[in-house]
Every structure is written in structure tokens, then in C-alpha cells.
Length: 301
Length: 331
Image (cartoon, rainbow over all chains, first blue to last red):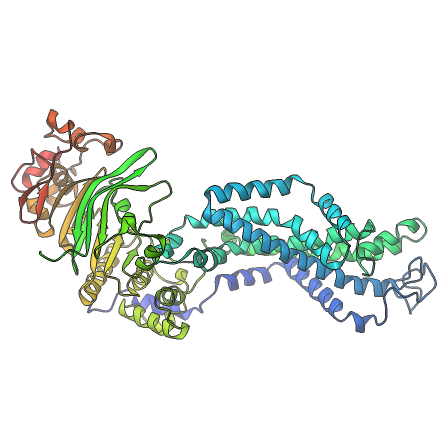
């Protein structure tokens, strides 16, 4: 090896291109997708409004501030109208965004944590652990999600924490299945064997070698999970099983139910907010899925 | 010859629920020595390699024999002892560098993590060592390349990274499982040269697994020929081309694409038949394909008999003479 290797010039040319993380490439692909960008913009605005809620709509959103059933666009004081008790619908939507986003995100985090833990354990170790955990996953999947959430919330006090946990608990099985499948597939790959041959322990293998490679499909699932968690919380509040001290879009839709024929806007305004946010999340999820798709980015995983 | 060898494999057998693909294989690797395991696909050479680190595929078990490395029997080691052994005392280089590197981690991290893991080095120190190692394996521009991802490297460069990972903790033995099969011929020579240079500089033993007799004859000190999980012959590499005795070894040599391997009709010689099912035979696994087989070959596996210095053959009818006769055997 005294002569310089003939591949050296090619290598120098290659280095000229800036090094790109696989995740960075996926992000670039994501930014190239129009629905995903639109979704991200909408979500960013909603998040901003939720964070700034006390400034955007000062005061208690549950306070009666106007005549009941003011239609949207009639009064400057209540731009989106008022409900049966004269509460400002604009303030409700703004403050309701907090509840929806917080519960949606927190429940997804719970679902991801439990699902990843179960799926990774089952997929990595296989054998008896796999058998037991897969039965557990199937057990949860046979119970209708929403019914289980209703039962759990009915047993304990409906607070933001219990609702979040209940939604998280029903949303982990799909994640576990996904992660398990990824771990099984990746566990058989050469680089995992190579890491084992290099003397790495189980935890290192799971966290450092396999998990980062298993994440892309999990991330795209996560955004759809947030959407379904928001829907679930809305449904729960619509049925009157939400946190009574919390303004939430679902509770607002439910409150407008009785006057649907005379004042449909009371349900429609918060309903529209739910539709917009859920659609945005689905667009982002779809964009992420496409961005991570190796056939699209030309990268072989 | 009085010192105990670095690695002593003795009577190793590996079994799966439905088959016993490695039976009674034994060989040694000395310090600073390159020993080649040769055989076609399905001969069990990779299984022998993974047995050394107890990394057999699911369902596989070592059912007999011993693997002594620096005096300890690896087959009896606990999982904790193995973790200490793997990567630190025995390292492995895999066949396919494209898949044996983690696609979402920079090559620098991958090399550094081995060092952090085994030697408890700090992140910064490990990174500096990683750059040194990448330089040692002659990766161009190592201080910049250290932050590259595997897909940004060529096949030969990836294999250099694999080798850097393997030698990161200065192991005493490197097991190279077909390290150049996935590479171009020109890159092959560079990678083998690199391995050989590192073997000399770090006085490591190298177990080279290959089916390429040309590679083996050039780079190995001794050659162990496997067929259907049995060791058929062991001989010094420099005697491989003109001193091989076993009909199978001769058949392999005759089937290598070289001018002398061409038959009278100008076609490349081949060994008739196939290896499938040969691991279930009670006698010599090669006898169904052997032109010289006698009925007695099928009764029991012939013993390995010394026929020269460091040269043993498990064939009672092994002919003497040069490679010219091997063509006749292969026909």
C-alpha cells in the first residue's frame, strides 16, 4: 500500500458534496410536498394561538360575555358568535386549542413510549417474550378503542391527565406492532450482527443500532396518532365525559348539539377547528411517510 | 511449535434442529499468522467463523468440541465474558460492507463507539482515535470523512471502515468472512494488502474465510479445506497449487479459471454433482462426486493423515503428484 489508492480522486469529488444526514434528506423531501407544508403551517399557527391564548383572547373563555346565539360576523365583540349561554366562541376555540393539542401530543407520547418499549422488547428478544407480548397486543386490539377510553375515564375522575393516559393506553398497540416488525427485520441485518460481533450489549444494540433505523415509520405514524387522539378527546368531551373545567372543542360541539337547528354555528365553529387540525396532521403524516419512503428519496435502507 | 496457539479449534460440531452442518472440524491459528478456511457455499465455513464468537444464527448450537482462544474455551464462556471477547480480543470483518455498517450513523461514530464501549474512552478521545484508525486503514482525508455516512463512501472505502472498526481495540484475532467478495478485483487486492499489513504491524492472527483459491494461495500461511462441514485437507498455502492431495481440493483447483484448468475441449473443468445433502452421509461427504471413490469411502469418514510437514489429508486414496493429474480427477 505504498501507492495512493486509485479511488482517492473519486473520494475527494464525493466529499465536495455536503454530507447529508438521512433525516435531513427526508426533511428536504417533506418540504417539497405541498400538502405537508400547508399542514405544517396550519399546525404552527394553531400551536402559536394555543400558546398565546391568554393574549389572543384574554379572560375566562367560560365567562358569559354576550347575548346568547349571536351569529358569527354580527358583533365585533364576539367575532365568531356566542353559544346558548352567551360565551364567546372565538375565545372557546382559541383556548380549546390548548386542550386539544396538549392531550393529543401527550397521549401520543404515552402511546409511543409504551408501544416502542413493548414492540422493541418483543421484536429484539423474540421467543417467549415475543409470544407473550404479541398476545398482549392482540388483547388490546380486540377491544374497541373508544369504548375502552370511555370505560377508563368513567371509572376514574375525568381530568386532563386521566384522559391523556386513557387515550395513550389505547393507542400503543399499533405502534408496538410496527416497532416489533421493524426490530425483527433490522435485527437480522448485517450491521446489527456486526455490532454484536463488536461486543455491544443488548441495550446498546436496541437504542443505538436498531431504534434509529426503526424510527421513520414510527414518526409518520405519530402525526396520525396525534390526530386520532384529538378526535378521541373531542368525542369524549362531546359525550360530556371530558374534563368539565376545561374548554375543549369536543365539549363545545356537544354544547351546541341542542340548538343545532336554530343556531348551527355553535357546533360548526369548533367542529371546523377540529377538521382543520386533524386534516393538517394527516397531511403532515402522509408527507412524512412519503419523505421516508426509500423508493422516493432513492435511498436504500 | 511448543507454544499454545492463539486459537485452537478442536473437534467443533455445530447442529441445527434438522442438520449438522459442521462436524468435527479442527485447526489452529497462531499469533501473527493467516489461516484460510476454504470451501464452496454450504461448506460450513461461515458457521465455523460465527462459532468463534458464539454468534450462530437462531437455532444453531455448538454440540461438540472446543474453541480455545488464549487458553479459554469460548464454548463455555458466559454471555458477559463473550461481550468482553467480542470486538476486543476477536474482531470480525464482514462480507458485505454496504450492509454491515449502520446506515444512519456516521462512520466516525461507529468506529468511536467500539472504543468507547470497550475502553471507556471519552467521546472526544474516541473520536480522535477513530480519525487515527481511519488514517491507518488509508481512508483518504480521514478528518473530514469521519463525519460521512456509509452511503457516501465507495465499497472499498466502506470495507476499510469495517476494518478500522475491527482493529479499533487491537484484537489478537481478526476473522474476515469473505472480506473482498463484494468488491472489485482491483479493490480486493488493496483491502487484502491492508489486512496483511495490519496483521504484521499489530501481530494479529487472521482467519481468512474465502472461496477464492487465488486469494487464499497469495495471502494465507496455511489453508484448511472444508466440504459439507468436514475438514478434508490442511496444507501450507505455498503448497496449495502443486501439492494438494485431496481429490476435492484438486477438483477445486482444476475448476479455478486459469489456463491450465481448461480441459481438452477448451472448457473450464467442473466438479460434477452438488454439495446438497452431503452433510448427512456417514462416510466421506465428497464420495458421491469423487472419481476415485471406493465403496469403503461411504462407510466412515476417513481419518486425517499427515502426509507432509503441516499437511494432513482425510482421504485414503489421495493421489500424489502435481496439479496436472487434478484435471483428470475433476473430469
